[in-house]
Image: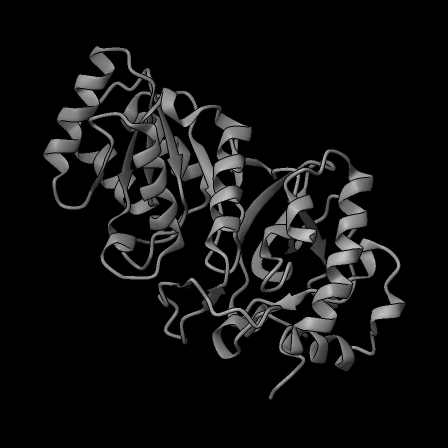
Length: 325
């Protein structure tokens, strides 16, 4: 089965081979994706290499049921819907694939979760249902088996006390937080975090003015007296995450890849280091769609690394909505 090969990819050649097989599988089994490809004039037999694969605009997750299987979903992940539009829905038919993806992805970048205490400061996600980030954080908290691992919503004083206690014990700790909550924590409290790795998950979620990542990290470093802020790049429509371990430069796990598309012609890819729209190949999405054109702007640094520079506004999205059902 294709799903058994996804997490065992060890080379670019292997990735490319699986990609083409997955494209053909999803062209046959995903009716929305097939109709999209056909409207672009692309058939299953025409695609011979990864750069020829069409990328489905992420907006389709708001309007269509994007699935490549007849199996009933185990869970439906939903987006926050802060843009005022309909929320995205990701119908996940096999939760074990998501769990394998985020567990192997975390291990790829950080090692054994049991070495950490995991603190999650994710108020905007905890306040609603259907968050894939909450599902992942909850699993990591439980797997860490540390008695102080936990979620934090309004109990900020308890979080501060816990951080100070863990620092005193020199306990390696992960503080996973949404940007606005981390900023508020950094601004209102004096902390000196030497043994805590801060992983921001992005987005002000309508709570504060959006700022660029470098400015955010500078404020967080100042507030927490740290040298480096880590980041997680994920979304409702994906089952994998890329991570930055510093300087806002992201890396994907072996079963995920980023390509950059031309902002004027989304069917064309950019091969140099220019800014464009971020296309994601997430092979863990075997049961939905692995090839997604996001609304994020970014650029490739090299074959393995990329930057996220911002988002399209509505007027910037050209040629994405090529199909109206």
